[in-house]
Image 1 (tube, rainbow, N blue to C red):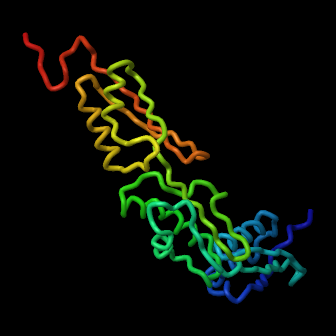
Image 2 (cartoon, helix red, strand yellow):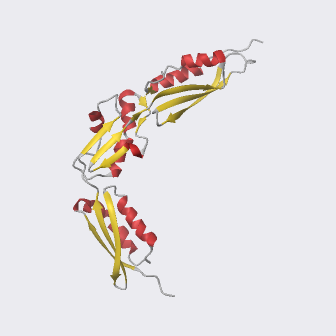
Amino acid sequence: MAAPTAITGYEIVADPALISGIKPLKPKFVANVGKPYSRTLLLEDVRRFQMLGTVGMVRAGEQSFKQGKKLLYRVEANPAIRSITLSGVSLFKPEEILKRFQTRPQQILDYNRLFADINAIPDYYMEKKGIMYADVTDLKDVAVRDGHVKIHVREFKMGDLVVKGVKGPEADLIRKSFKVKKGSVINRATLLASLHDIFQLSTVKDLDWYPRFDRERATVSMILQVTPVDESLPPKGRSRAD
């Protein structure tokens, strides 16, 4: 049975803008010299290039070299960024958010850096206005074409308030105590204060809550799971007289 063909060398041709990013990868490629050639190993190499974030395309090939195979890679850079625009932002000027981005026009598009900037958008809303649930929630909300980057931010508004575990007047009292209005953005302090007020009601033993998102409508409904106080027990904060 013939021995597997070994990797005997590498040749990497890359756009000049990528050289500094590729240099740290050299030890990884050197470590593969002498190993048996496999499709899996080649795909791992390609993945290594793609993880740089600035790589647009990797063309792979091979040729005979020193009784083995030399792996050949042609690595092409992403386009330079021509513009970055934000849509869906109503609480700030888009420029205020873009000023915090590390991604800038004229740079080679780096998807790692771009998505790090995008993932920080919710923090900006929270830091500046205490607003929850403003985010870029779908890859379709990030479009890159001909160097133009377009990002759509969804500022989720309050949807329905769903009260479970109690009905009638008790449920109505809980709804009245909930101060986040339908159709408004969700302020964290207002939400937490509402939950605190509900928990303090004499009819409430325990309270759990969770959001339910409608990404198409950009709304978030609040589900309140209420455990009522056992009517056979005294109200909270009081002791039954002997």
